[in-house]
Length: 232
Image (cartoon, rainbow, N blue to C red; front, side, top):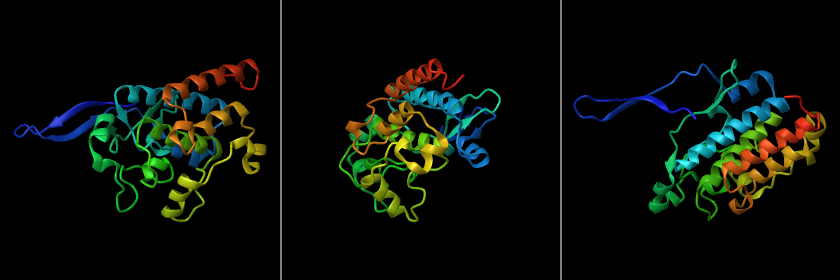
């Protein structure tokens, strides 16, 4: 992920004025989907492995991003290096566990920031589960779904309330069982299985770490290479 290169403070009060970020000459994954449609399988694997490992490093530092989405991941078109950006909603694990108010439902159903199309069931404030790194894994799964298909699972719902209901109550079938996308995109079952595990409603049923996601994507990459399904 991108870390600030400079912290600007007021010379008198020492209060924070701004963070200066490195310019990585990148565009968001959201823009790439809008311009080019769903990612090819090789590009998806290249980008998703970077995202999951960056998320692992972030979690190792005790940080939950809480707003993973395609607009918050940027990629340099020349190098294909991907970066997670926008830590405005981020929290340290200890801040969430030590502050009861952060686990209470806000009046708009969104106590923890984030973007409704990508947020985990527990982040909606409608289920009794703590928010931890597994919430980021769910949001990353929603992002991976969008990269592969071109839209998020509940994009067609017209209201925020309906989308929240989808996250809480509507199970998304594995991509290879969705007739609307599987025939056209030919997503390998091994990728569908990884994605399906990432977006389970119950955090206990998901991957328990971003490292686990990265490891399975690495193994899937080598399997698809050895099977000549992809060439890079």
